[in-house]
Image (cartoon, rainbow, N blue to C red; front, side, top):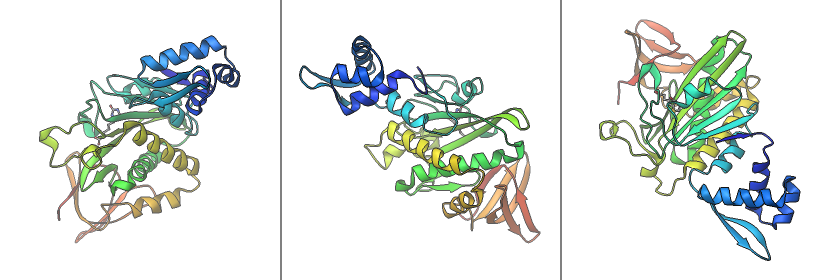
Length: 309
Ligand code: BTN
């Protein structure tokens, strides 16, 4: 399903949510009464429950989870986002997001979810699998900042669960990974598209082989809803992207406040090279500063392991 900014279905949805007669809804959304009636039938097919009362009119009683229309409304509030795609299944939302622009892509499951460093991302139903595709005129060197910003957005969205960020962009709950981010860059310097993919374990079951390292939110909150997690991430992305790049300093400070890595003994590996020492800071480019007997080193990307765990 594709929903674009200004789509009449969104206006109808908002009015039905508030409640009103077919005539009122039709007028407010600028459509015919037949269009409202057809839309209510479509909502029913999608799992929404709409009460129809001869006197009071239509009113939304319950929504499915995920709820595509609530999610479209949240996604379209992100600055620069013009369209929202909702899939039941796609190979990878990042792969799809590269083919579209200024969009948020969500899928209920992925058949070939991609992780960092060429890994696979388990993408069974119940998770949040989303990608943000934005045309941004920023140099390639700024991409790590967008990745860090996204990690912060997810972490803030999950703050009630005590979420923390492990450098560069894993979000942890109770010390276990609940979310990962994969940023990709398409195009040329200053005329590029940034695709940031976010995977969050929400109601999906973590495979047994990963249970010591990964967690799904339903394990700490039985009533957690995919729609709410997605909506909160979009709200945080809206706030942070409106402040980027002008307020990068403040964003970074907040990242550090939620960092799980600063102060820990780490081993960071990137394509066979290893840096071992104490993580003491993240610099203005988002690089991790590691101090060891050999001195101070800056690591710009890689995989980080805690060695004093
Ligand atoms: C990681 O390895 O930690 C990053 C995982 C990123 C997974 C997300 S799920 C949505 C988007 N589409 C993909 O294929 N991957 C990212």
